[in-house]
Image (cartoon, rainbow, N blue to C red; front, side, top):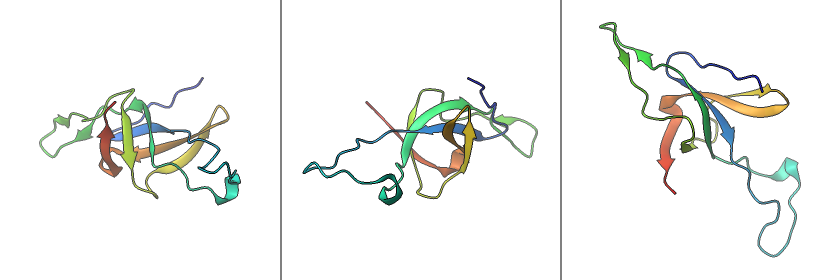
Length: 97
């Protein structure tokens, strides 16, 4: 797999798959589904460059599961996989467990 190396305070995220079936066994077609708003961090940039010349370290790391806004990031396709590139500030929080 090719891997995008994010710059500055950007991260590469893979959306978490949700179950195909809803309660009651009803299958929802892909076109009607809400896109998941949580995912796994695949790559992390070095951090934002501050005015005084040092880098602000990133609060997230590869492998973290994060929650992000519905319209956060830019969708890209890399090796036939749909991924998101977003700023660290677009991440609402990390999920534990």
